[in-house]
Image 1 (tube, helix red, strand yellow):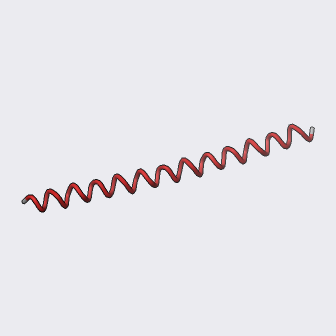
Image 2 (cartoon, one colour; image 1 turned 90 degrees about the horizontal axis):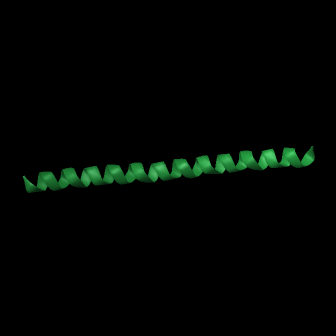
Length: 48
């Protein structure tokens, strides 16, 4: 019984950890996209 509980807790911890890492990568990618968009807007502003 204790082993089953331990395995369940370990599984939940691994799933939460993987979701957290995936979320960080997604937010990082979004930040890069927004930064690139801002750079393009700056270039257009400078050229006009």
